[in-house]
Length: 296
Ligand SMILES: [Mg+2]
Image (tube, rainbow, N blue to C red; front, side, top):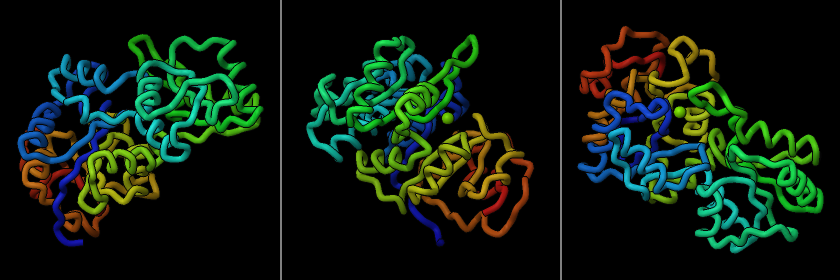
């Protein structure tokens, strides 16, 4: 593939822009560069708890200014998916405002009377009654959807069980597996691209996980950039049967591409090796091909 122009960017949030509440190096500059150069972009998260407005405010507290219309959550993707499948339908929801607001805005009615869907999101306050109701509705024919498959989530004190784990409880009780919307389902990226009128050939995604971000990006046909500022470690990358287009230390290394949009996937072709990458302050590293390239 010859040099291409990247016009649309999808970027993961945790491990790419922030770690917990702390901004990662280059994140604020990257977002500012996208805005200044009028690139279309969305910040993605599998977390369905918060509305885009909440997340925009949280990012602002971390020094990163992302307008709410530039945020895409698994709750929004779920709302778009179900309203595309069954317009103006009904759902029984276990979740927080991020999910219920998204469904309302997509024209959905929240109902316990034989709803089209049972939709499970994240909440820290599950009740036995809610779980029982969800199971009974599914057994009566409601379709089972879960916003995201993550088995656990991070907190300051350690992990908490997340939607993926609760989904397995309901799946065991009903013998019905849910359809998961969030990453690694490429539906998350496809719905995001629709939202910003992006085309896969001229769109890129940035993520910190091979097993969710990169695989979903590959399946959605996007250019993929893996940053080493989050979950996936450099040594792990070659174990996967798929590869990112490019590996960089952090999002700051992608500033030159964000700025002029030019990207040549062939720069990294034909090698399996680990270079000694320059630390991410040198903005030219990525564009000149002296970033980390494991293979290409
Ligand atoms: Mg991440």
